[in-house]
Image 1 (tube, helix red, strand yellow):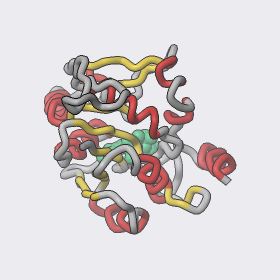
Image 2: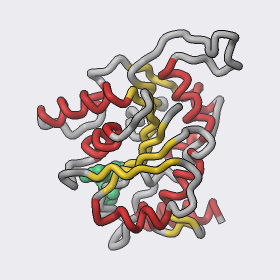
Image 3: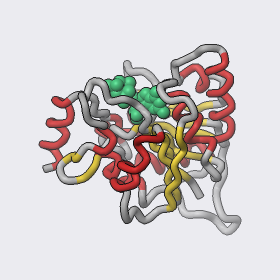
Length: 219
Ligand SMILES: Nc1nc2c(ncn2[C@@H]2O[C@H](COP(=O)(O)OP(=O)(O)OP(=O)(O)O)[C@@H](O)[C@H]2O)c(=O)[nH]1
Ligand SMILES: [Mg+2]
C-alpha cells in the first residue's frame, strides 16, 4: 500500500494571476493530470495546499478513483519543504511518492521504480513469501547527470522525512535537500530513469510559455 502526496501550496507567481494547480491544461486541470498518472501506482492521494485552494482542487479531482485527503498548511507560504512535511504527516502508509502539482508528465513506471528502490523490493513477481527484499532506504531520489536532486519527484519513508523536515525548518532551512541529507537515501541515476520512462517525468510547468508548450504536446 502506498500513497502519493501532491504538493500544491505555492502561489504560481511565475504563472500569473491564476493557480497553476487547477489551470486547464489541454482540457484537464493540471493537478488532475498528475493524479490520473498516479492512479495505477498508488492506493491513496494526499493533496497539500492552502485552505482557500481546497474547493477548486476538490472540483478538479471530482470522480477521482482513489481515496483522497487534503493536508492544509497551518502556515501558508513556508515553502515546498513545509508543504512536503504537512502532506507526509497525513500519509498512513510507510512510503509515499512526493510530487509537485506542476509535473503533468510524471511517468508511472518511474514512480513504481522509485518505490521499488526505496522499499528494497525488486521489480519481479512476488515470491512465495510475498516479496523479495534487498535493502530499504528512507528515500529514493532521482538525480540526472549534471542536475540537482529531484526532491519533489521522490519516494520517502513518510515519518522519517516529515521529522527531518520539521528539524530542518526549525534550523531555518528552506532547501528540500537539507532534510534529505539527514536520511538514509539512495540516488536513482539517469540511466535507471531512462530505462523506465521519459525524462519528461521531471518537467515542471512554471510560466505561461511552458504551459503553452505542454499544452501543445498534449493536444
Ligand atoms: N505548501 C506549499 N507548497 C509550495 C510552496 N511554494 C511552492 N510550493 C509547491 O512546491 C512546488 C514547486 O514550487 P514552484 O514550482 O516554485 O511553484 P510555485 O511556488 O507555486 O510557483 P512560483 O510562485 O512561480 O515559484 C509546487 O507544487 C508548489 O505548489 C509553499 O510555500 N507552500
Ligand atoms: Mg516557487
